[in-house]
Image 1 (cartoon, helix red, strand yellow):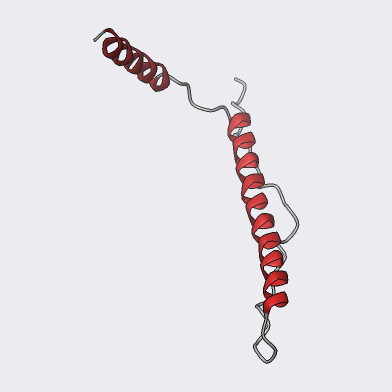
Image 2 (tube, one colour; image 1 turned 45 degrees about the vertical axis):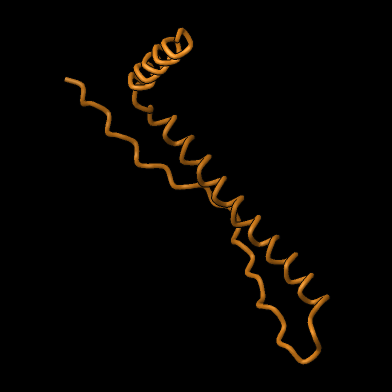
Length: 93
């Protein structure tokens, strides 16, 4: 019974802590967007390498007279996402 009560208390405490997180700063949002773009590019490169490996194996077991596997398309070079335009500075009075 004590474990259930302790788990329930910890669950409520953790949910209240997570609910109070401040919004991201522009720098943090930009860093998160860059990380997301790098991960997506890594996925595309991984899919390309997998396609090459699959075609290599398919060529080894291909019966003469059957069509060759489809060609793989290489992903374009990585380009970081474009940063949003900086907010206008407040005018001095």
